[in-house]
Image (cartoon, rainbow, N blue to C red; front, side):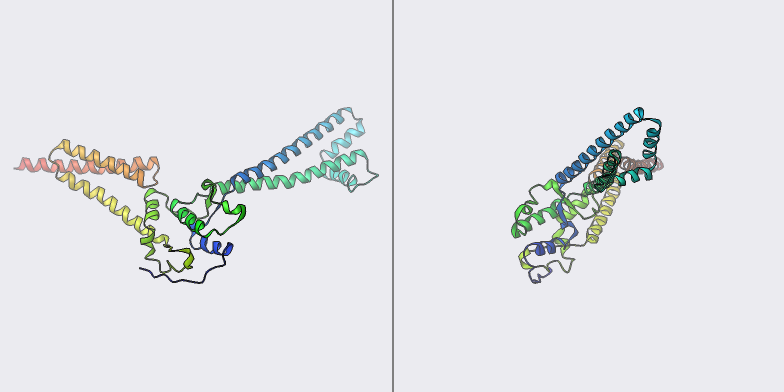
Length: 309
């Protein structure tokens, strides 16, 4: 068993908290702030909608003016709505509180301000959408790391004020760790074999004494256990089925065993792995085909031996 080697305590608060969550990727747990993120996007969306309505009204005014204008005025309207340099020139002439600017130049200056603001808000809005899409795909923390995190947090109380309520809503938490194998077998091993796997990790208990006993383990140990368990389970289904079928005394009993083993195989693949439905059907059909071929061969061999006698 690994011995506990105490190291100096960290300064209580953010320093201690940061040191704790940095010891394992599964403890990189933070708030998602989903409600505030949605509110931020809605604020940007509302400002864009306001800018859209203002520009639409401006365009309608320009269209109405175009119908009433003289031929020379129509040419000016046509140019400022088709040529960016002309539009910007008029806007700059009407900007900077130029007292000698015409009403039309001031109108174009107001339009340019809205257009420039549109660039900023649209960029913020689209960036917020993309970031929220990425944050929304971040996984929630697993139960076992979340429990260890919660126990440590409740014991140490590293944060004060509104930030101290970070664990009040478990649905608002995310984990930055990239999920490994997500099948049920992998989750069970990670949740229940942590302390045993910690024996392989020579630094399992080299943490401050105030943190309590902490066991960490390397992901490769879980992967090895998963590989061993998968191979053993596959061998059990094949060898076990063949041995059982070899001792079956009648064809009806053999078919019953084939059905039972096939059903058990499909259940294990569906429950213990992350196989898709098509993969589940394909693997089950292949397994059943192997058993049927074995039964057919065994039956033919038995009949041949009986006839020879």
